[in-house]
Length: 332
Image (tube, rainbow, N blue to C red):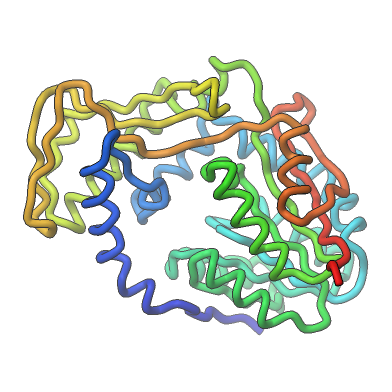
């Protein structure tokens, strides 16, 4: 009834090579940058779970509130019949479990398909979901999003699909990247299928920045762990005490940006790359975007990506939006 399939084992094996290539390119660019996907190794994932429990980090609680209050309406709009619940970037699956439990309570015929790049995360989630809901049909896919979407395209079958992209993960993508990703998802789904996407809404700038720069320094540890990962996996010699986490609001982009700033002039060797990278005092490494949205932005993004907005659900404070989109008729 349950299992785990590795779709792109080659990509898994080549992760170290890809990390090395991204570090070499990113630390040679101006300004320096590193892709945010490398934040989430085992230690980064552990730290992110701590972040979601912080008072300053509201998105996880806000979205959980939405799913508790509106899950019956969301699932009713998806329709009856056999259902695949496809969880893109499933993480620890805590919020998704709210939907799984409701589907079980309602006696629905459904299969859970979590997709994540981390094999350990997927296997852990498959086990936890099976323990929580005995007899659950669950098939975990270890893959990057592109391979997961390709699986969706090839394995259409007769089941309806509800794809989840929760936790404001869409905010880590630029607008062109988001459109490209969502157009691929639209093509992989069938007419009448749905996606539920989490959007962190624009609000007071101070509140936004505090969510990414908490007073306990957990977010700083999370960001600095990226340098520690380079040390562990590539033989880097980063002294974390010589870098500082910095979060700021970019008005033009509508995004919180996260940086690691060198507090002094230094050269940092990376053994696997056979070279050192020079930093000037107060030079930064850009590590993450977290774009925030207006509801009008969400509608425009759905239209540009081949979806129709069917409904939107917000928490009581109006800080977060889960938007339910439907795949419309295909052009002939």
